[in-house]
Image (cartoon, rainbow, N blue to C red; front, side, top):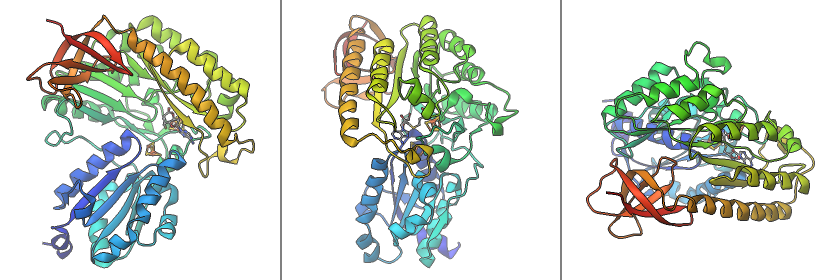
Length: 449
Ligand code: SAH
Ligand code: SF4
Ligand code: F3S
């Protein structure tokens, strides 16, 4: 056996993941590669020989968390020879070798397209002590679930495309991930078929912008539109629920709405990030749609899909946002009445066009607007939840409830958490629950016989 492999055989790896679901999926993929390469994993940083952070650059706060964790590791590294510290994910591609200036004891900086090399890079770092930076874009593979090693036996995320071509002016993703590329439909259908045979009942199709599946410059010849792909996934034997994320409101074709409305396995929920409710600000964000276009998409969706669960992302305090623009966002909430809103204070990202805009909104004003926005959004989400009381929900069971004894929890088709008393259920069971009350965003009820 190679001496470097011999040397790393006993090495325990601690891998901590920050950021979005792509990172979660890719961390799982890297875990699989490490296990195949004779490393072992540990959930405990104290007993690790290798510490890896899979990082996110979407907002400054996300990066701060990692810089402060790294700052604590210098002494740990020096205490024992052969220890390895690595940064993966979007900070690897946004900072590249600059990370070594911030944290000189770092051994490896590896971007998302280079993960196949992670085991080898760890071995080399442990054996030679030389730092490596691998941050080029080169999307040669899509991470796949291993049917023998699923995090949850009944649910899985499936990556159907990578990266993004939209270039919203606030967003770092096109710079950290590179150009959009769609995965061939046969490969997606093959993966879903094999995990369905292993017992998976729900899949979430994942991409920064799934509605443009097959449309990007590097996606020609893939053969299926997103709507067609969704239809085919929904017809795979054993798959009872199909979800997808994220949809860009610009590309919301009618055939997609039709598939959502007519294919039984496709869930009645959609995440449709609007970002803001002012045409002026949307234009400066380069979102390429107007408020009227967005509302028209919502109207069409609601007209076709019963009980649609609709969520969004909103940014407050984008450069140049005036009180009247923000008022437009509040008006939009009144118009749509979202089931959940994910709201963020604008965070300038190095290299993005918005970071160079001169009319930044003060932190004080951002805080004040965020508080007003959240108050309205919470009230509406709570009212939407309340409207489920008295209804019967079909629930896919996730497991025993944490805080309520002798109770289980799961998700409704809309993706609301439902808690119900009972005994002997297992993840993946499907039950019907009559909803009797709600607390914050959770529903409580009893099994309908
Ligand atoms: N591809 C998805 C979202 C990716 S990032 C989409 O286009 O909707 C998730 C969310 O983070 C975005 O929807 C946006 O609301 C938020 N976000 C992205 N960049 C940001 C920034 N610089 N400051 C604050 N929020 C940001
Ligand atoms: Fe970022 Fe916009 Fe692409 Fe979403 S669509 S990842 S916000 S550039
Ligand atoms: Fe963050 Fe990169 Fe995902 S910036 S949100 S980890 S694509």
